[in-house]
Image (cartoon, rainbow, N blue to C red; front, side):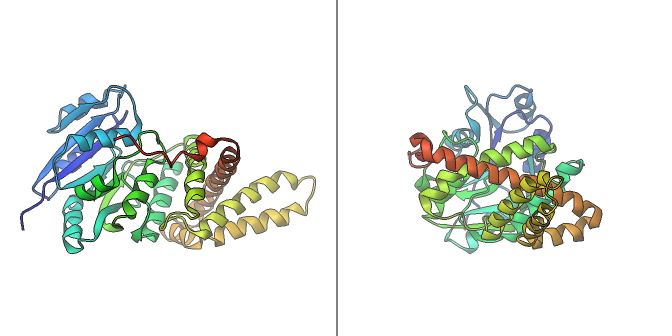
Length: 334
């Protein structure tokens, strides 16, 4: 059986800090047949010039269109049987592409295989950066197996499956992955696997992290309501309950000085939020100990509350905005 050509597509937007490491990790892959397309999504920090120093095809977008549009443009410039998407803030282990190819060969029903980043960040990080990577790793590791959600920051898709599902919707800048994976999952199986591994640099400050959690949860509302369900994988009922209880804990906290009995509600809500995703907290305790766990719990409480606020805002927007209700029902441009 001939060795398949794998096309690695890297969307790039102001990733000066990580792009060299990202592209070096592609060059170090054990799989022998690769083509690499980097799509500069109108960067302003010189990261495109750094990418151009590597043996890649550099495609420049005329204007910033977001990750979905950048990935579409990259796929258009590739020819491989397998398209491997890699965000520019990630590096791959040297066998990542080879493992994806092997998984496709082992199971022809797989249309996509998505990887799981390590529990260690790409760079030494402060507390928020460490929190984010541990949480990101655990949620994906705990969902390992067949999923209906997509993780295109580190994942491979058969070209035939991608063409059948159609391109990413360029109108979606934060939730293009869930939309595309839903179309893909209707046609083939999607696997989330730790056989495909990488290392990630993600949000390292609290305010941008909370903003991202709020926006993404708000934009998921019409997706959930259109389908009557969440995605299979990371989005469990327990985690939905955890988010709601986190919001209750924070909302009742200011009442305690005037109404001491509110402390019981706060404590019960906090305990319930932890118990609803207990495996995550056990994992963090094993990895980093009690002191770090206490700080992790507080950070995750704030993130869960931001998720609940985003969902509440999205429900209100869904009720009054026909355009918002149609967010995922309009076909993406080819």
